[in-house]
Length: 337
Image (cartoon, rainbow, N blue to C red; front, side):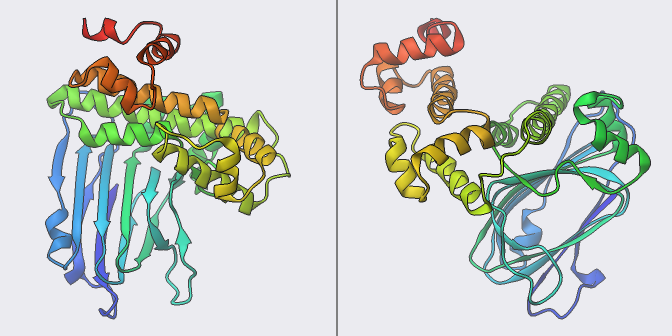
């Protein structure tokens, strides 16, 4: 497949070959012995007056595009895929215009993801000035995708049928909210320091984890559990914002009453809706984030256990140790002993 990217400031009347930034060929075959080629595309955007970190990872059957772009003016970014592929998109932060018309409404894509099969894709993202686009995009060949998941695996039955039939399709009808695990894996991909075959293996494992989380979320929301009609779109947005608050305040989380006041939804609906959307109670979600952060801090071995406990919001280090052991099955001191 070929993946092309063009960008133009709003003042440029139309796209042309002069504005082609790069073109990448993605091989159809999946070869586990191929290594990753890394390319820094940042200068292509900085030359146009943009603050950017654009990094591309390429290997057989896969291209990953890591994008952190701060715009200084309104601009259009044209992305074109010339052959069918599996497209995984994760927008951690960003306001974009999804269409080509001048009156397209602003779409807040913050914290959304999607899994799609596209036979051909030509998309213009209209980025408004002075905003940050923080996104991670993965393109897989069909061969690579089916090598990872299998052609007849029931966990993606309908999605796989459309792929085999060559019909454009998305796992879900619209983008779904990212969860903390997805954000964690993307951060691990961004900070991976492995080299050669180990980097390739790490990338494949993380991509498989992301697909697992996408399929799992879809299954629990739309297959196993019939979606409840009590949650309106406005309620869903408010509950998503509650999760963002918890992500930032995991070491000193607000009470459920305070959280409901902050997002503007009553406590009962917040608790039930959070469980429905994220398949977790609010308490369990905060605990999970704390323990993942604890695991990271303990592995770094730069802080004493008391300091780790305080960093995570535990006033009593013994309470932290007990929570850590209950979550992981061993004490934090056993990791550094």
